[in-house]
Length: 192
Image: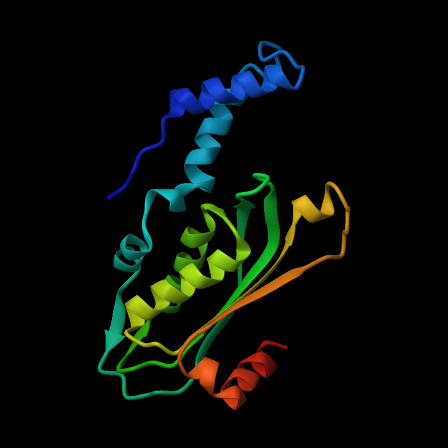
C-alpha cells in the first residue's frame, strides 16, 4: 500500500532548516526551495513507501517453465541512496545481482527496478544488499542469490576525514553462493 509523504510538513521543516543555518528562506533564490525539496523527496525517497514484500509484488513478473539452472548476473546497475546516519548522499553506487533460477527467471529490467526502489530509502549500504537479496529470493523462488554493492559515501568524502578515494563494497551471499566457494569465485571473476 503506497504511503504518501506530508509535503506541507516537509516544506515547513526545510524552511526552518534554512533559517537555522543562517539564511533567509524569503531570499529570491530560496523562496521556492522548500517546495522543490518536498517534490524532490517524493522522488528520491519513493522506496520508503513500500515494504520489501510490496516491492516483490510490484516487480515480481517472471518467465516460468524455464529449464535452465545456470548462473544469471546483472551487473553495473547504477543507483544512489542517502545514508540514514547523516542524510548524506551515497553515490557512484553500482549493484551486481546474481541468482540461480529454479524454474523461472525474472525480467532483467525488473532486477534494476528492484535495486533502484530499495536504494530510494534512508539506508545503510549493508541493508541495501540484504533487501535486494531478500526481494530477489521472494520473486525468483530461489535461495541462491548474491548481491554486491559498491559505492562512495559523501559522509566519508565531503566531510570529516575527506577520504576522497574511499569506496565501500558490501555483499549479501545466500544459498549456494554461501556454501559453494567456486561458484562465488566465478561471480567475482565475471564482475572484473
